[in-house]
Image 1 (cartoon, one colour):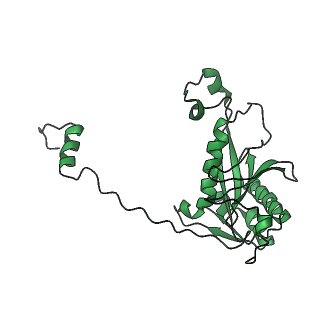
Image 2 (tube, helix red, strand yellow; image 1 turned 120 degrees about the vertical axis):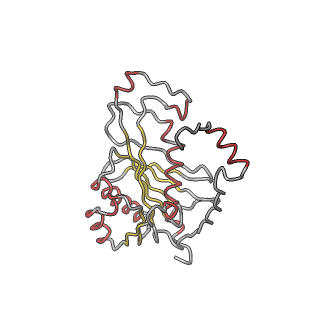
Image 3 (tube, helix red, strand yellow; image 1 turned 180 degrees about the horizontal axis):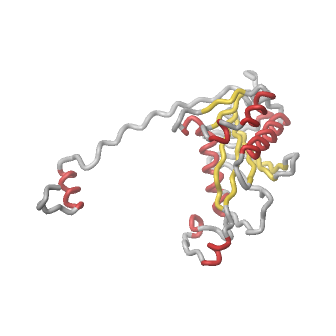
Amino acid sequence: MIAGEVGHPHATVWRTLKRAGISRPPRQPREQPRLYEWPCPGDLLHIDSKRFVRFSRPGHAVTGDRYVSGAEKRMRIGYEWVHSLVDDHSRYAYSELHRDERADTVTAFVERGLAHFAAHGVEVKRLMSDNAFVYRRNRSLAELLARHQIKHLLIPIRRPQVNGKVERYQQTLKRECGLGQVTAPQTTAPRRCHTGSATTTSTDHTAHSAAGHQSAVSTTSRGRTARAPGRASTAGAC
């Protein structure tokens, strides 16, 4: 601004720019999604984790009430992380709830997940993840995948759409399960989180892993009835 010049209110500047048609740049056309699906269960698994806030009572996303008392603030209930594996072909999902997302937690979760898919007759060939440090630089996870001869794929930087199947599943899981759950402050053991599909008919099977961690498995799909991997693996192409 030139010295001595009187500035104009932002609203006036915005109206002037709007009349000239330059108030904001034109919206760029959205990139068309490139859909893909591997032909057989186990050809590709998607992995991701999502942080859930622990609640002493349902939060404002459910009740609409944002009031938090001083006692509730001092409770410091903390967070939990949902770790999920989603099969690319069948949309079959395996999830566990943990108190952290450290490397050893992720590796142990993947090992139990692989055992669960193997129990359904599914041989996992590839695992796709984002570029989080816990996946990209996890030595124990790399050794586990090498023992099972599973190829680890990383999505391009800042391209979560490539891993969209598990990303969408995690969002649905948080909206339909996490936001309405109440967690006692003294609870430290992993708790079961019911999973399901908001778009299609799904079958839920509550499961407990061999290590005693409570988990949940479900089938999810986009626009069609979901199929369990054990049944889908009998298709002619597989």
